Image (cartoon, rainbow, N blue to C red; front, side, top):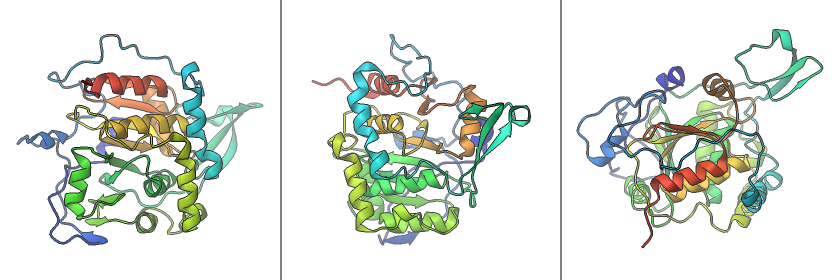
Length: 341
């Protein structure tokens, strides 16, 4: 994804704000610097692309690691209950976050369909072409402090998928030692989600305000119906996660990676939810490439990996690139979870 990443930059954690407010304006920051500044590094650098070699100082993948063969819609035998629980959100939220804003579908003759583009289905010599109408694209990665088990955070994640945004997520699980305290230091409140947009200098709380802001700046300005129903929206967001019994909420002791991981996913996918829960519990920062239907990122991933399926994880710390949700979760736990006493 060298070309894609060249147009997006990300930055370190911000300095403390002097006067926390609902929506405040921050100083504009320089372009890309390395995530290693979290470890008090004094040498800023541009984040390496996924094709660059992993840092030689970082441990390799687990000794028994085997990259799984991707299989669409495959559910491993021991994961059926997890998958059913993660799937509850689809009917509860009526598929919100499954389609990009301005989604359109058309049938194109196979001979006219670009070979480097992804199609979900082919029927009678025609392929389904899915497109969308996107607003302005941010030059720098929007940063969001949140956690998986929060209904208000889920609302914001849905609009991220709908607007096809690439976002840097800082997971803030309960008892997490790194990003939850940092978010409180930045904004002055123990409240989530908390968004920082380095493109405009805006930092803000309140899920509804964040959704409105993102729509006005990166969408068509119209908040989707399922995200504009007030208490009903919040209740259905909560019910969508109730079966998971707090997964993606509490911290699991872990090693902080030198660089953020990268995840191709979208909010409505139950497969992606399983991986997001693990990333949050392990407090692993990750660049989230939205891939809802109609997303241009689907074609990008298809070109890059030769296959489209989500979730897809890249770990620049170890060089691992992999599909399959169950195996991704096991990899994350084996690589980053600390041994329990």
